[in-house]
Length: 217
Image (tube, rainbow, N blue to C red; front, side):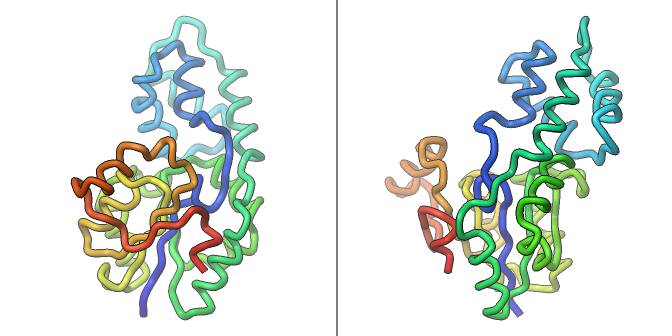
């Protein structure tokens, strides 16, 4: 049996333009270039609630005036931020009815995943395996994250598809494993360099390129 793996953010759901890692980095007085430090914390650990998150951030990042209330607000906002992209549930349902196993592989943190499930309950119920960074302790473009997904689904990577909006994080590692790929160009402005690389032949071309998840059907 074959499988289709989906990214979540900007592939199945849409949310704020600014990532939570960047939001929290700014609240902590860090430069945007330091958001990776925050992302490694919030995306790769399981937190019980905003207070637990703040305790872990305090241990890792020095801040004279720790903005716990503001960080807690970011958490609460993220729980309600995701909105299903039109056609997402229909696309996953079509894939499932066509006989494919369905997986998720996503860099995501606890509150946004809760928001995704609340926004897309039918879609979430069709998932056979979810490889989520906060549960696995790994972030894309880690090959291990994809390897765990295909192993859990019991499929050969060459019989699997990866559907995502980010070339570097979603498609490149999938191609390296021999998977087929669907590039959902929902944010073309952010993928300009990768698009240029594909057009000029410096980067391998995905198997399929679509404008929106609805086109996967």
